[in-house]
Amino acid sequence: MNGSMGNNGLGKFLAGRLFKLITLLVAVSLITFILMKLSPIDPVTAYVGADSRVGAEQRELIAQQWGLDRPPAEQFLSWFSSLLSGDWGQSIIYRRPVLSVIGEKFLASLAVMAAAWALSGVIGFSLGVLSGVKEGKLTDKLIRGYCHVLISTPTFWLGILFVMVFAVWLGWFPVALSVPIGVLAEDVTMMDKLSHLVLPVLTLSVINIAGICMHTREKTVEVLRSDYVLFAKARGENRRQIVRSHVLRNVSLPAITLQFLSFSELFGGAVFVEQVFSYPGLGQAAVQAGLRGDVPLLMGITIISLLFVYTGNTAADLLYRAVDPRIRERYAR
Image (cartoon, rainbow, N blue to C red; front, top):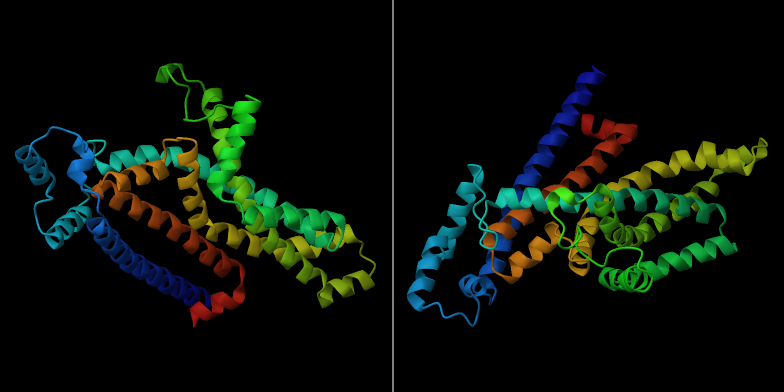
């Protein structure tokens, strides 16, 4: 009985999330399309160049080929109907199918975001627990000061600083790009790719550490001040036993949930990081699509980024639902 109620609750939860996702996709796509049409950037001019000698007739032919001569409402409905049939359109910049461009760029961005996500989660959680356990001491003050500085630091500024220190002054890592310049694709080694990945990952992870650390610290302090920890101390448990048996168990779930909810900040930070390091990922493609009026590509990237962030939020909700029995009962009812 309880199993069937749980399954029904899970089904309703997933159905509700799917309905919200569909409405979000339609709303975000429509808003993005309207903003692109209100933009002063002319896709044809951005494509041929402002100083190009392309005549008016050729410009009209280009606009007609891209469907830019039709009313905006008709353009959106045509794009949306093609999207539903699996055709995401052709990129104006790359002259390739949008899905092909996004697939290539997303894999590059995923390597940066996945490494930064894991690194920031582990370091942020560890520093947060350490800061909470050492509340009021020098270690706690140093960690909190470090986090406060990072929270107020722009991502692009930190990336430029890392380039100056580690790439220009010390020469430890490459300045930019994802592979060495002038090297054939078959000659690029894994070490070459990893060396180009270090600074973007370091920049993105260092920024995201602060939020996880401060949240984990507050939860750790809250647990250490609780009645059951006081009872554990009365039973003779030492600090290490309390941290292992009570703090880590009660702090890990909120930290993991917050980590999944940080997908939006992770994606937004990746846009700045890829611009600073000229890393050929999805963020840089989104900036180029916006600056050059590539509506099909920008719309496709918007949808992919929405799915990426929404997946993180749904995973966080499912995690809470799987672990917290109160949430399971609420959905079952």
